[in-house]
Amino acid sequence: FRAGAAGIIERAGGSMEEEMEQLRSSRSLAGGEFALSDVFYFYKKGVESIVDDQVTQRFSSEELASWNLLTRTNQNFRYISLRLTVIWGLGVFVRYCVLFPLRITLAIIGLSWLVIGTTLVGFLPESSVKNWLSELVHLTCYRICARGLSATIHYHNKENKPQKGGICVANHTTPIDVVILANDGCYAMVGQIHGGLMGVIQRSMVRSCPHVWFERSEMKDRHTVTSRLRAHVTAKTKLPILIFPEGTCINNTSVMMFKKGSFEIGGTIYPVAIKYDPRFGDAFWNSSKYNMVSYLLRMMTSWAIVVNVWYLPPMTIQDGEDAAQFANRVKSAIAEQGGLLDLAWDGGLKRGKVKDSFKEEQQKMYSSIIVRHDDTNSSNSCSGNTEEQ
Amino acid sequence: MGSSSSSMDHIPNAEELMQETGFSAAHLLRLYERFEFLDKDQTGELRPEDFGAIGGLALNPIGDRIISAFFSPGQETVDFPSFVRVLAHFRPNGTNRTRNGTQQEPVNSRTRKLKFAFQLYDQDRDGKISRAELLQVLRAMLGIQVTEEQLQSIAERAIQEADLDRDDAISFDEFKKVQQVSPHPQTPTKETPLHPTEGGR
Image (cartoon, rainbow over all chains, first blue to last red; front, side, top):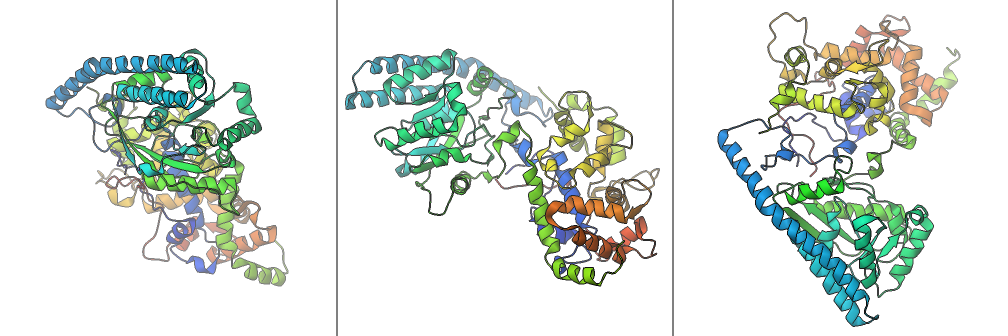
Protein backbone atom coordinates (compact mmCIF):
# COMPACT_ATOMS: atom_id res chain seq x y z
CA PHE A 1 0.00 0.00 0.00
CA ARG A 2 1.45 3.27 -0.95
CA ALA A 3 0.09 6.58 0.28
CA GLY A 4 2.29 9.39 -0.91
CA ALA A 5 2.08 12.64 0.93
CA ALA A 6 0.28 14.16 -2.01
CA GLY A 7 -2.05 11.62 -3.54
CA ILE A 8 -1.82 12.70 -7.09
CA ILE A 9 -3.73 10.17 -9.09
CA GLU A 10 -6.83 8.23 -8.25
CA ARG A 11 -7.00 5.42 -10.74
CA ALA A 12 -10.26 3.73 -11.53
CA GLY A 13 -8.38 0.56 -12.26
CA GLY A 14 -10.79 -1.04 -14.67
CA SER A 15 -10.29 -2.63 -18.04
CA MET A 16 -10.43 -0.55 -21.20
CA GLU A 17 -14.06 -1.60 -21.65
CA GLU A 18 -15.14 -0.70 -18.16
CA GLU A 19 -13.49 2.67 -18.16
CA MET A 20 -14.83 3.60 -21.57
CA GLU A 21 -18.32 2.67 -20.53
CA GLN A 22 -18.03 5.04 -17.62
CA LEU A 23 -16.85 7.83 -19.85
CA ARG A 24 -19.65 7.34 -22.32
CA SER A 25 -22.47 9.01 -20.54
CA SER A 26 -24.77 8.71 -23.47
CA ARG A 27 -24.46 5.23 -24.76
CA SER A 28 -23.48 1.86 -23.49
CA LEU A 29 -20.90 -0.31 -25.18
CA ALA A 30 -23.37 -3.01 -26.03
CA GLY A 31 -24.09 -1.31 -29.30
CA GLY A 32 -20.45 -1.67 -30.17
CA GLU A 33 -20.22 1.69 -31.77
CA PHE A 34 -17.90 4.59 -31.68
CA ALA A 35 -18.71 7.55 -29.48
CA LEU A 36 -16.99 10.91 -29.53
CA SER A 37 -16.20 10.57 -25.87
CA ASP A 38 -14.08 7.47 -26.47
CA VAL A 39 -11.12 9.72 -27.00
CA PHE A 40 -11.46 10.74 -23.36
CA TYR A 41 -10.30 7.31 -22.27
CA PHE A 42 -7.06 7.56 -24.19
CA TYR A 43 -6.30 11.07 -23.25
CA LYS A 44 -7.06 10.42 -19.61
CA LYS A 45 -4.67 7.48 -19.69
CA GLY A 46 -2.12 9.59 -21.50
CA VAL A 47 -2.19 12.44 -19.01
CA GLU A 48 -2.09 10.00 -16.13
CA SER A 49 1.14 8.60 -17.45
CA ILE A 50 2.55 12.08 -17.85
CA VAL A 51 1.94 12.77 -14.20
CA ASP A 52 3.12 9.40 -12.99
CA ASP A 53 3.68 6.19 -14.87
CA GLN A 54 3.80 2.59 -13.82
CA VAL A 55 7.24 1.90 -15.16
CA THR A 56 9.24 4.85 -13.86
CA GLN A 57 7.67 4.40 -10.44
CA ARG A 58 9.37 1.04 -10.15
CA PHE A 59 12.83 2.46 -10.53
CA SER A 60 12.80 4.90 -7.68
CA SER A 61 12.58 4.08 -4.04
CA GLU A 62 9.28 3.24 -2.51
CA GLU A 63 7.66 6.05 -0.57
CA LEU A 64 6.80 5.51 3.06
CA ALA A 65 3.59 6.29 4.82
CA SER A 66 5.39 7.71 7.80
CA TRP A 67 8.92 8.83 8.19
CA ASN A 68 11.44 6.39 9.55
CA LEU A 69 13.98 8.95 10.73
CA LEU A 70 16.26 8.55 7.77
CA THR A 71 16.92 11.79 5.91
CA ARG A 72 17.15 9.92 2.67
CA THR A 73 13.47 9.05 2.79
CA ASN A 74 12.59 12.55 3.82
CA GLN A 75 11.11 13.67 0.53
CA ASN A 76 7.85 15.22 1.47
CA PHE A 77 8.16 15.89 5.12
CA ARG A 78 8.55 19.29 6.64
CA TYR A 79 10.23 20.43 9.79
CA ILE A 80 7.81 19.37 12.46
CA SER A 81 9.17 19.85 15.94
CA LEU A 82 12.32 20.23 17.96
CA ARG A 83 11.80 16.92 19.67
CA LEU A 84 11.72 15.11 16.37
CA THR A 85 14.91 16.80 15.29
CA VAL A 86 16.63 15.72 18.47
CA ILE A 87 15.51 12.16 18.04
CA TRP A 88 16.63 12.25 14.45
CA GLY A 89 20.02 13.62 15.49
CA LEU A 90 20.40 10.80 17.97
CA GLY A 91 19.51 8.38 15.25
CA VAL A 92 22.23 9.77 13.02
CA PHE A 93 24.78 9.42 15.77
CA VAL A 94 23.80 5.85 16.51
CA ARG A 95 23.73 4.84 12.88
CA TYR A 96 26.95 6.44 11.77
CA CYS A 97 29.15 6.20 14.84
CA VAL A 98 28.00 3.02 16.48
CA LEU A 99 26.42 0.73 13.96
CA PHE A 100 28.43 1.64 10.91
CA PRO A 101 31.93 0.84 12.25
CA LEU A 102 30.66 -2.45 13.62
CA ARG A 103 29.15 -3.36 10.29
CA ILE A 104 32.16 -2.39 8.24
CA THR A 105 34.39 -4.53 10.43
CA LEU A 106 32.07 -7.47 10.05
CA ALA A 107 31.86 -7.03 6.32
CA ILE A 108 35.62 -6.94 5.94
CA ILE A 109 36.02 -10.02 8.10
CA GLY A 110 33.32 -11.80 6.15
CA LEU A 111 34.75 -11.04 2.73
CA SER A 112 38.33 -11.81 3.59
CA TRP A 113 37.34 -15.09 5.16
CA LEU A 114 35.40 -15.88 2.00
CA VAL A 115 38.44 -15.37 -0.17
CA ILE A 116 40.88 -17.10 2.12
CA GLY A 117 38.57 -19.93 3.04
CA THR A 118 37.55 -20.79 -0.49
CA THR A 119 41.12 -20.66 -1.74
CA LEU A 120 42.20 -23.03 1.01
CA VAL A 121 39.37 -25.42 0.31
CA GLY A 122 40.26 -25.25 -3.34
CA PHE A 123 43.53 -26.98 -2.66
CA LEU A 124 41.76 -30.13 -1.53
CA PRO A 125 41.05 -32.92 -4.00
CA GLU A 126 37.49 -33.49 -5.12
CA SER A 127 35.65 -35.33 -2.39
CA SER A 128 32.59 -35.10 -0.24
CA VAL A 129 34.74 -33.55 2.46
CA LYS A 130 35.65 -30.80 0.10
CA ASN A 131 32.03 -30.12 -0.71
CA TRP A 132 31.09 -30.11 2.93
CA LEU A 133 33.91 -27.74 3.80
CA SER A 134 33.08 -25.50 0.89
CA GLU A 135 29.49 -25.26 2.05
CA LEU A 136 30.66 -24.46 5.53
CA VAL A 137 32.94 -21.71 4.34
CA HIS A 138 30.33 -20.17 2.09
CA LEU A 139 27.61 -20.24 4.70
CA THR A 140 29.78 -18.78 7.40
CA CYS A 141 30.97 -15.95 5.23
CA TYR A 142 27.55 -15.04 4.01
CA ARG A 143 26.24 -15.07 7.52
CA ILE A 144 28.97 -12.74 8.64
CA CYS A 145 28.29 -10.47 5.70
CA ALA A 146 24.61 -10.48 6.50
CA ARG A 147 25.39 -9.43 10.03
CA GLY A 148 27.55 -6.76 8.51
CA LEU A 149 24.41 -5.33 6.99
CA SER A 150 22.27 -5.97 10.03
CA ALA A 151 20.08 -8.18 7.97
CA THR A 152 17.28 -9.91 9.76
CA ILE A 153 15.96 -12.61 7.53
CA HIS A 154 12.83 -14.65 7.99
CA TYR A 155 12.63 -17.75 5.88
CA HIS A 156 9.25 -19.27 5.20
CA ASN A 157 8.38 -22.70 3.88
CA LYS A 158 11.85 -24.10 4.18
CA GLU A 159 10.60 -27.44 2.97
CA ASN A 160 10.57 -26.00 -0.53
CA LYS A 161 14.21 -25.08 -0.50
CA PRO A 162 15.93 -25.45 -3.87
CA GLN A 163 17.55 -28.82 -4.41
CA LYS A 164 20.64 -29.83 -6.31
CA GLY A 165 20.21 -29.82 -10.04
CA GLY A 166 17.46 -27.25 -9.93
CA ILE A 167 17.21 -23.60 -10.82
CA CYS A 168 16.31 -21.02 -8.24
CA VAL A 169 14.59 -17.88 -9.54
CA ALA A 170 13.81 -14.83 -7.48
CA ASN A 171 12.76 -11.23 -7.89
CA HIS A 172 15.64 -8.80 -7.92
CA THR A 173 15.92 -5.68 -5.85
CA THR A 174 19.58 -5.37 -4.99
CA PRO A 175 22.83 -7.28 -5.27
CA ILE A 176 22.36 -8.06 -1.59
CA ASP A 177 19.67 -10.53 -2.65
CA VAL A 178 22.52 -12.95 -3.21
CA VAL A 179 23.72 -12.64 0.37
CA ILE A 180 20.19 -12.99 1.66
CA LEU A 181 19.53 -16.21 -0.17
CA ALA A 182 22.97 -17.67 0.36
CA ASN A 183 22.53 -17.41 4.09
CA ASP A 184 20.30 -20.40 4.03
CA GLY A 185 21.82 -22.63 1.45
CA CYS A 186 24.53 -22.91 -1.13
CA TYR A 187 23.90 -21.85 -4.66
CA ALA A 188 25.89 -21.81 -7.82
CA MET A 189 26.06 -18.21 -8.86
CA VAL A 190 25.69 -17.13 -12.43
CA GLY A 191 27.16 -13.97 -13.76
CA GLN A 192 29.77 -12.03 -15.56
CA ILE A 193 33.37 -11.98 -14.48
CA HIS A 194 34.30 -8.55 -13.17
CA GLY A 195 37.65 -7.03 -12.54
CA GLY A 196 38.91 -5.71 -9.26
CA LEU A 197 37.72 -6.87 -5.88
CA MET A 198 34.63 -8.59 -7.30
CA GLY A 199 36.83 -10.52 -9.68
CA VAL A 200 39.06 -11.73 -6.89
CA ILE A 201 36.08 -12.92 -4.91
CA GLN A 202 34.59 -14.62 -7.95
CA ARG A 203 37.76 -16.44 -8.86
CA SER A 204 38.36 -17.73 -5.38
CA MET A 205 34.76 -18.85 -4.99
CA VAL A 206 34.90 -20.95 -8.09
CA ARG A 207 37.87 -22.85 -6.69
CA SER A 208 35.86 -24.50 -4.00
CA CYS A 209 32.61 -25.21 -5.79
CA PRO A 210 31.44 -24.81 -9.36
CA HIS A 211 29.88 -21.43 -10.03
CA VAL A 212 29.13 -20.34 -13.55
CA TRP A 213 31.06 -17.25 -14.44
CA PHE A 214 31.01 -15.93 -17.98
CA GLU A 215 33.40 -13.76 -19.85
CA ARG A 216 31.81 -10.62 -21.17
CA SER A 217 32.00 -11.86 -24.75
CA GLU A 218 30.27 -15.10 -23.86
CA MET A 219 27.34 -13.30 -22.29
CA LYS A 220 26.25 -11.95 -25.66
CA ASP A 221 25.85 -15.42 -27.07
CA ARG A 222 22.62 -16.75 -25.65
CA HIS A 223 23.25 -20.20 -26.98
CA THR A 224 26.53 -20.58 -25.15
CA VAL A 225 25.01 -19.33 -21.96
CA THR A 226 22.04 -21.66 -22.18
CA SER A 227 24.09 -24.72 -22.98
CA ARG A 228 26.55 -24.12 -20.18
CA LEU A 229 23.74 -23.69 -17.71
CA ARG A 230 22.00 -26.73 -19.05
CA ALA A 231 25.16 -28.78 -18.61
CA HIS A 232 25.37 -27.60 -15.04
CA VAL A 233 21.79 -28.48 -14.29
CA THR A 234 21.77 -31.93 -15.83
CA ALA A 235 24.72 -32.94 -13.67
CA LYS A 236 22.34 -33.48 -10.81
CA THR A 237 25.05 -33.33 -8.20
CA LYS A 238 25.80 -29.69 -8.67
CA LEU A 239 24.36 -26.93 -6.56
CA PRO A 240 21.17 -25.20 -7.69
CA ILE A 241 21.74 -22.23 -9.95
CA LEU A 242 20.58 -18.84 -8.78
CA ILE A 243 19.09 -16.63 -11.46
CA PHE A 244 17.27 -13.30 -11.41
CA PRO A 245 15.11 -13.33 -14.53
CA GLU A 246 14.08 -9.69 -14.37
CA GLY A 247 17.55 -8.78 -15.47
CA THR A 248 17.72 -5.59 -13.46
CA CYS A 249 17.00 -4.20 -10.02
CA ILE A 250 13.40 -3.22 -9.37
CA ASN A 251 12.29 -1.27 -6.33
CA ASN A 252 10.56 -4.18 -4.57
CA THR A 253 7.01 -2.96 -5.05
CA SER A 254 6.39 -5.06 -8.10
CA VAL A 255 7.69 -7.86 -10.25
CA MET A 256 8.47 -7.04 -13.84
CA MET A 257 8.67 -9.23 -16.88
CA PHE A 258 10.78 -12.36 -16.51
CA LYS A 259 13.15 -12.97 -19.36
CA LYS A 260 12.32 -16.33 -20.80
CA GLY A 261 15.94 -17.38 -21.30
CA SER A 262 16.19 -18.74 -17.78
CA PHE A 263 13.16 -20.88 -18.35
CA GLU A 264 14.45 -22.53 -21.48
CA ILE A 265 17.22 -24.37 -19.71
CA GLY A 266 15.01 -27.14 -18.45
CA GLY A 267 15.04 -28.71 -15.04
CA THR A 268 12.91 -27.86 -12.05
CA ILE A 269 12.34 -24.25 -11.15
CA TYR A 270 12.29 -23.28 -7.49
CA PRO A 271 10.68 -19.84 -7.22
CA VAL A 272 11.60 -17.63 -4.31
CA ALA A 273 9.90 -14.39 -3.31
CA ILE A 274 11.95 -11.76 -1.50
CA LYS A 275 10.33 -8.82 0.20
CA TYR A 276 12.21 -6.13 2.09
CA ASP A 277 10.57 -4.15 4.85
CA PRO A 278 10.99 -0.53 3.77
CA ARG A 279 10.56 0.90 7.21
CA PHE A 280 14.02 -0.06 8.36
CA GLY A 281 16.00 0.85 5.32
CA ASP A 282 15.61 1.14 1.62
CA ALA A 283 17.29 -1.82 0.02
CA PHE A 284 16.67 -0.88 -3.60
CA TRP A 285 19.79 -0.22 -5.64
CA ASN A 286 19.15 2.64 -8.00
CA SER A 287 22.16 2.04 -10.20
CA SER A 288 21.66 5.26 -12.11
CA LYS A 289 21.81 7.27 -8.92
CA TYR A 290 24.35 5.46 -6.76
CA ASN A 291 27.34 3.37 -7.53
CA MET A 292 28.06 0.16 -5.67
CA VAL A 293 30.23 1.68 -2.96
CA SER A 294 27.87 4.49 -2.00
CA TYR A 295 25.03 2.02 -2.13
CA LEU A 296 26.76 -0.26 0.36
CA LEU A 297 27.50 2.69 2.59
CA ARG A 298 23.84 3.63 2.56
CA MET A 299 22.92 0.08 3.43
CA MET A 300 25.29 0.05 6.34
CA THR A 301 23.97 3.28 7.75
CA SER A 302 20.31 2.35 7.65
CA TRP A 303 18.57 0.98 10.67
CA ALA A 304 18.53 -2.59 9.44
CA ILE A 305 17.60 -4.74 6.53
CA VAL A 306 14.56 -6.77 7.40
CA VAL A 307 13.66 -9.36 4.81
CA ASN A 308 11.04 -11.99 4.29
CA VAL A 309 11.95 -14.87 2.04
CA TRP A 310 9.33 -17.32 0.88
CA TYR A 311 10.30 -20.56 -0.76
CA LEU A 312 7.58 -21.56 -3.22
CA PRO A 313 6.80 -25.12 -4.31
CA PRO A 314 8.83 -26.22 -7.32
CA MET A 315 7.40 -25.75 -10.78
CA THR A 316 8.10 -27.37 -14.11
CA ILE A 317 7.08 -26.46 -17.59
CA GLN A 318 3.76 -27.96 -18.60
CA ASP A 319 2.89 -29.51 -21.93
CA GLY A 320 1.71 -27.02 -24.48
CA GLU A 321 3.28 -24.16 -22.57
CA ASP A 322 6.12 -22.20 -24.05
CA ALA A 323 8.96 -20.61 -22.13
CA ALA A 324 7.34 -17.17 -22.05
CA GLN A 325 4.08 -18.47 -20.61
CA PHE A 326 5.93 -20.55 -18.07
CA ALA A 327 7.93 -17.47 -17.09
CA ASN A 328 4.72 -15.53 -16.55
CA ARG A 329 3.25 -18.27 -14.46
CA VAL A 330 6.26 -18.32 -12.18
CA LYS A 331 6.27 -14.54 -12.02
CA SER A 332 2.65 -14.41 -10.90
CA ALA A 333 3.30 -16.98 -8.21
CA ILE A 334 6.19 -14.95 -6.86
CA ALA A 335 4.29 -11.69 -7.03
CA GLU A 336 1.34 -13.15 -5.20
CA GLN A 337 3.41 -14.62 -2.40
CA GLY A 338 5.47 -11.52 -1.85
CA GLY A 339 2.54 -9.13 -1.98
CA LEU A 340 4.04 -7.41 -5.01
CA LEU A 341 2.35 -6.00 -8.05
CA ASP A 342 2.54 -8.27 -11.07
CA LEU A 343 3.49 -6.15 -14.06
CA ALA A 344 3.90 -7.13 -17.66
CA TRP A 345 6.42 -4.40 -18.31
CA ASP A 346 9.95 -5.21 -19.23
CA GLY A 347 12.58 -4.10 -16.74
CA GLY A 348 14.66 -3.11 -19.73
CA LEU A 349 12.38 -0.12 -20.12
CA LYS A 350 14.46 1.44 -17.40
CA ARG A 351 16.86 2.26 -20.17
CA GLY A 352 15.09 1.65 -23.46
CA LYS A 353 11.95 2.70 -25.25
CA VAL A 354 8.60 1.08 -25.75
CA LYS A 355 8.12 -1.15 -28.75
CA ASP A 356 5.54 -0.25 -31.37
CA SER A 357 3.79 -3.54 -30.82
CA PHE A 358 2.48 -2.23 -27.52
CA LYS A 359 0.69 0.58 -29.30
CA GLU A 360 -0.83 -1.92 -31.68
CA GLU A 361 -2.13 -3.86 -28.71
CA GLN A 362 -4.00 -0.81 -27.52
CA GLN A 363 -5.43 -0.22 -30.96
CA LYS A 364 -6.46 -3.83 -31.22
CA MET A 365 -8.24 -3.70 -27.90
CA TYR A 366 -10.12 -0.57 -28.83
CA SER A 367 -11.13 -1.81 -32.24
CA SER A 368 -12.48 -5.02 -30.78
CA ILE A 369 -14.72 -2.93 -28.57
CA ILE A 370 -16.28 -0.83 -31.25
CA VAL A 371 -16.03 -2.95 -34.34
CA ARG A 372 -17.66 -5.98 -32.81
CA HIS A 373 -21.13 -5.18 -34.00
CA ASP A 374 -20.08 -2.67 -36.54
CA ASP A 375 -19.22 -5.37 -39.03
CA THR A 376 -22.86 -6.11 -39.71
CA ASN A 377 -23.86 -2.46 -39.66
CA SER A 378 -21.04 -1.23 -41.84
CA SER A 379 -21.64 -3.79 -44.52
CA ASN A 380 -25.26 -2.67 -44.71
CA SER A 381 -24.39 0.97 -44.88
CA CYS A 382 -21.61 0.36 -47.38
CA SER A 383 -23.89 -1.47 -49.74
CA GLY A 384 -26.61 1.09 -49.29
CA ASN A 385 -24.23 3.96 -49.68
CA THR A 386 -24.28 5.20 -53.19
CA GLU A 387 -22.49 8.42 -52.52
CA GLU A 388 -18.87 8.28 -51.48
CA GLN A 389 -17.81 11.53 -49.93
CA MET B 1 16.82 19.04 9.28
CA GLY B 2 15.54 18.69 5.80
CA SER B 3 12.23 20.29 5.05
CA SER B 4 10.38 20.56 1.80
CA SER B 5 9.82 24.29 2.09
CA SER B 6 13.27 24.82 0.63
CA SER B 7 12.28 23.02 -2.55
CA MET B 8 9.21 25.21 -2.97
CA ASP B 9 11.56 28.14 -3.45
CA HIS B 10 12.76 26.59 -6.66
CA ILE B 11 9.36 26.90 -8.18
CA PRO B 12 8.90 30.26 -9.86
CA ASN B 13 5.77 32.16 -8.88
CA ALA B 14 4.50 29.30 -6.78
CA GLU B 15 1.83 31.35 -5.03
CA GLU B 16 0.34 32.68 -8.24
CA LEU B 17 0.38 29.27 -9.81
CA MET B 18 -1.44 27.83 -6.87
CA GLN B 19 -4.05 30.55 -7.08
CA GLU B 20 -4.50 30.23 -10.77
CA THR B 21 -4.63 26.48 -11.02
CA GLY B 22 -6.03 25.52 -7.66
CA PHE B 23 -3.32 23.00 -6.92
CA SER B 24 -2.21 22.64 -3.34
CA ALA B 25 1.40 23.23 -2.34
CA ALA B 26 2.03 19.52 -2.00
CA HIS B 27 0.61 18.82 -5.45
CA LEU B 28 2.60 21.59 -7.00
CA LEU B 29 5.77 20.27 -5.47
CA ARG B 30 4.98 16.81 -6.69
CA LEU B 31 4.38 18.07 -10.21
CA TYR B 32 7.58 20.06 -10.05
CA GLU B 33 9.54 16.97 -9.17
CA ARG B 34 7.88 15.15 -12.02
CA PHE B 35 8.73 18.02 -14.36
CA GLU B 36 12.35 17.90 -13.29
CA PHE B 37 12.41 14.17 -13.75
CA LEU B 38 11.06 14.45 -17.31
CA ASP B 39 13.50 17.24 -18.09
CA LYS B 40 16.39 14.90 -18.74
CA ASP B 41 18.95 17.49 -19.77
CA GLN B 42 18.00 19.97 -17.08
CA THR B 43 17.18 22.89 -19.34
CA GLY B 44 14.20 23.97 -17.26
CA GLU B 45 11.87 23.30 -20.17
CA LEU B 46 10.34 20.23 -21.72
CA ARG B 47 10.49 19.28 -25.37
CA PRO B 48 8.33 16.76 -27.21
CA GLU B 49 11.10 14.14 -26.94
CA ASP B 50 10.98 14.36 -23.16
CA PHE B 51 7.33 13.39 -23.25
CA GLY B 52 8.06 10.69 -25.75
CA ALA B 53 10.24 8.91 -23.23
CA ILE B 54 7.26 8.05 -21.07
CA GLY B 55 6.32 4.44 -21.67
CA GLY B 56 2.61 4.77 -21.05
CA LEU B 57 2.42 7.66 -23.46
CA ALA B 58 4.41 5.99 -26.20
CA LEU B 59 1.91 3.18 -26.47
CA ASN B 60 -1.08 5.48 -26.30
CA PRO B 61 -2.70 5.67 -29.76
CA ILE B 62 -3.26 9.40 -29.44
CA GLY B 63 -0.08 10.01 -27.48
CA ASP B 64 1.27 12.46 -30.03
CA ARG B 65 -1.83 14.60 -29.83
CA ILE B 66 -1.72 14.69 -26.09
CA ILE B 67 1.89 15.79 -26.22
CA SER B 68 1.14 18.58 -28.68
CA ALA B 69 -1.65 19.77 -26.41
CA PHE B 70 1.03 20.95 -24.03
CA PHE B 71 2.74 23.07 -26.65
CA SER B 72 1.12 26.25 -27.84
CA PRO B 73 1.13 26.62 -31.62
CA GLY B 74 4.61 27.49 -32.79
CA GLN B 75 6.24 26.76 -29.47
CA GLU B 76 8.85 24.09 -29.18
CA THR B 77 9.31 24.00 -25.45
CA VAL B 78 7.04 24.12 -22.46
CA ASP B 79 8.05 25.58 -19.14
CA PHE B 80 6.80 24.57 -15.73
CA PRO B 81 3.93 27.09 -15.39
CA SER B 82 2.51 26.06 -18.76
CA PHE B 83 2.94 22.40 -17.84
CA VAL B 84 0.97 22.91 -14.68
CA ARG B 85 -1.71 25.00 -16.36
CA VAL B 86 -2.47 22.24 -18.83
CA LEU B 87 -2.62 19.64 -16.09
CA ALA B 88 -4.87 21.91 -14.06
CA HIS B 89 -7.66 21.06 -16.48
CA PHE B 90 -7.80 17.66 -14.89
CA ARG B 91 -8.44 18.52 -11.31
CA PRO B 92 -11.76 17.21 -10.10
CA ASN B 93 -14.47 19.86 -9.96
CA GLY B 94 -15.32 19.33 -6.34
CA THR B 95 -12.10 20.69 -4.92
CA ASN B 96 -12.40 24.23 -6.15
CA ARG B 97 -11.75 26.67 -3.42
CA THR B 98 -13.70 29.89 -3.30
CA ARG B 99 -12.38 32.37 -5.78
CA ASN B 100 -12.32 36.05 -5.21
CA GLY B 101 -14.48 36.65 -8.21
CA THR B 102 -11.83 38.04 -10.50
CA GLN B 103 -11.67 34.92 -12.63
CA GLN B 104 -14.30 34.13 -15.18
CA GLU B 105 -14.56 30.45 -14.44
CA PRO B 106 -12.25 28.00 -12.73
CA VAL B 107 -9.64 26.34 -14.86
CA ASN B 108 -11.00 22.88 -14.41
CA SER B 109 -14.65 23.55 -14.99
CA ARG B 110 -16.54 21.11 -17.09
CA THR B 111 -16.63 23.40 -20.07
CA ARG B 112 -12.90 23.92 -20.02
CA LYS B 113 -12.35 20.19 -19.85
CA LEU B 114 -14.61 19.61 -22.80
CA LYS B 115 -12.89 22.38 -24.69
CA PHE B 116 -9.60 20.66 -24.12
CA ALA B 117 -10.97 17.38 -25.43
CA PHE B 118 -12.52 19.19 -28.36
CA GLN B 119 -9.14 20.59 -29.31
CA LEU B 120 -7.72 17.12 -29.43
CA TYR B 121 -9.93 16.57 -32.43
CA ASP B 122 -9.85 20.08 -33.82
CA GLN B 123 -6.17 20.42 -34.58
CA ASP B 124 -6.42 23.46 -36.85
CA ARG B 125 -8.37 25.32 -34.17
CA ASP B 126 -11.08 26.53 -36.47
CA GLY B 127 -13.76 25.71 -33.92
CA LYS B 128 -15.18 22.76 -35.79
CA ILE B 129 -14.34 19.10 -36.07
CA SER B 130 -14.36 18.38 -39.77
CA ARG B 131 -14.82 14.94 -41.20
CA ALA B 132 -11.13 14.80 -42.04
CA GLU B 133 -10.13 15.62 -38.48
CA LEU B 134 -12.48 13.01 -37.10
CA LEU B 135 -11.05 10.45 -39.47
CA GLN B 136 -7.54 11.30 -38.31
CA VAL B 137 -8.37 10.61 -34.70
CA LEU B 138 -10.21 7.44 -35.57
CA ARG B 139 -7.30 6.22 -37.62
CA ALA B 140 -4.94 6.92 -34.74
CA MET B 141 -7.08 5.04 -32.26
CA LEU B 142 -7.68 2.06 -34.49
CA GLY B 143 -4.50 1.82 -36.50
CA ILE B 144 -4.47 -0.97 -39.01
CA GLN B 145 -7.19 -2.90 -37.25
CA VAL B 146 -10.03 -1.62 -39.42
CA THR B 147 -10.43 -1.07 -43.13
CA GLU B 148 -10.87 2.28 -44.81
CA GLU B 149 -14.57 1.61 -45.42
CA GLN B 150 -15.21 0.74 -41.81
CA LEU B 151 -13.45 3.91 -40.78
CA GLN B 152 -15.50 6.03 -43.15
CA SER B 153 -18.75 4.54 -41.99
CA ILE B 154 -17.90 5.03 -38.33
CA ALA B 155 -17.06 8.66 -38.98
CA GLU B 156 -20.18 9.09 -41.07
CA ARG B 157 -22.42 7.82 -38.34
CA ALA B 158 -20.74 9.90 -35.67
CA ILE B 159 -21.18 13.08 -37.67
CA GLN B 160 -24.76 12.33 -38.53
CA GLU B 161 -25.59 11.86 -34.89
CA ALA B 162 -23.86 14.91 -33.59
CA ASP B 163 -24.17 17.39 -36.43
CA LEU B 164 -27.40 19.22 -35.71
CA ASP B 165 -27.04 22.20 -38.00
CA ARG B 166 -26.12 20.05 -40.95
CA ASP B 167 -22.90 21.82 -41.82
CA ASP B 168 -21.06 18.53 -42.05
CA ALA B 169 -18.84 19.35 -39.09
CA ILE B 170 -19.18 19.20 -35.35
CA SER B 171 -19.00 22.50 -33.53
CA PHE B 172 -18.15 22.86 -29.89
CA ASP B 173 -21.77 23.26 -28.85
CA GLU B 174 -22.78 20.13 -30.71
CA PHE B 175 -19.86 18.34 -29.09
CA LYS B 176 -21.04 19.45 -25.67
CA LYS B 177 -24.57 18.30 -26.37
CA VAL B 178 -23.43 14.81 -27.22
CA GLN B 179 -21.74 14.51 -23.83
CA GLN B 180 -24.67 15.81 -21.91
CA VAL B 181 -27.23 13.09 -22.23
CA SER B 182 -26.82 11.50 -18.84
CA PRO B 183 -27.29 13.35 -15.54
CA HIS B 184 -23.81 12.42 -14.36
CA PRO B 185 -21.36 13.71 -16.93
CA GLN B 186 -18.15 11.80 -16.64
CA THR B 187 -15.19 13.96 -17.35
CA PRO B 188 -11.72 12.56 -16.80
CA THR B 189 -11.07 13.21 -13.15
CA LYS B 190 -7.78 13.01 -11.41
CA GLU B 191 -5.82 14.19 -8.48
CA THR B 192 -8.08 13.81 -5.55
CA PRO B 193 -6.01 15.03 -2.63
CA LEU B 194 -7.96 13.06 -0.10
CA HIS B 195 -7.50 9.69 -1.68
CA PRO B 196 -4.38 7.59 -1.58
CA THR B 197 -2.69 6.64 -4.82
CA GLU B 198 -3.45 3.38 -6.53
CA GLY B 199 -3.09 0.40 -4.32
CA GLY B 200 -2.18 -3.11 -5.23
CA ARG B 201 0.46 -3.74 -2.60
